[in-house]
Image 1 (cartoon, rainbow, N blue to C red):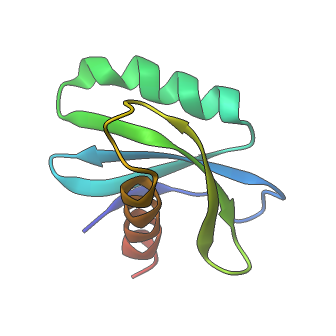
Image 2 (image 1 turned 90 degrees about the horizontal axis):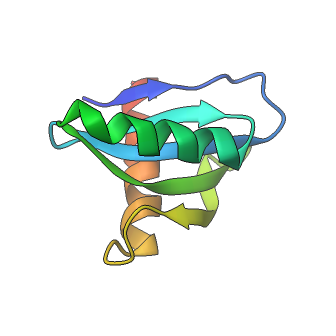
Length: 92
């Protein structure tokens, strides 16, 4: 089970990557600034653990690169893996 809100019509997609009650989740944005703001303001929800922001390649169904990390102790590999899990979880 995953949480996702992805606009498949967007030309360039940036995913705010998080865990919500230990489940991977993503929310898509058109800009990194909006994705970062979402994660920074969502921390108050308590159960949401922000990880970072990645650029998403809709054609390859993969994260291109990590643009922003919420915490430097979170590895870019974990952020990218969670982005993929959140994306795939919403497609099933």
